[in-house]
Length: 147
Image (cartoon, rainbow, N blue to C red; front, side, top):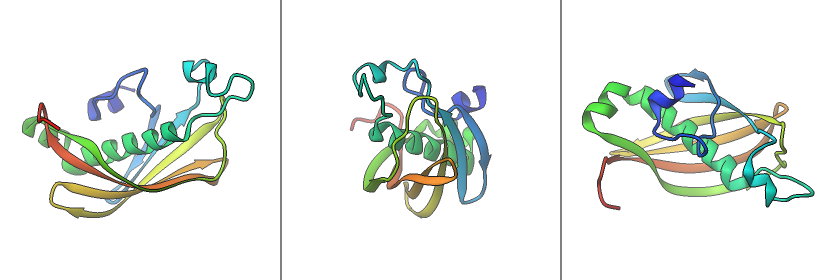
């Protein structure tokens, strides 16, 4: 968990990556086990708990930020005081429901870099099948920069 916390600013209860599996030149793979005790299941939905699609996307975005921290370098991010932040979501698709107790594999792939913007594609895998996909962009934003 320390290797994740060293790479991205997210912290519980809004951290949706449990483990980094691997980071390569053009992609990264992480893992998340959906805990049954998450407060979200009290309302989504009490008699049929489903992990929200928006949170599966967040797991992909956090994996993308972990990927960028490795690609750019943690020292570079820290010395330039920049944070990867979400700047665009395109074409999110949800194919399988994710339930409490499931373990998902999160994959991100770099599509292209244009200046400070990184276009990525993400996939969530459940039981070796694609459960959801999303294309998105992360931007490197100077810390304390107004939105």
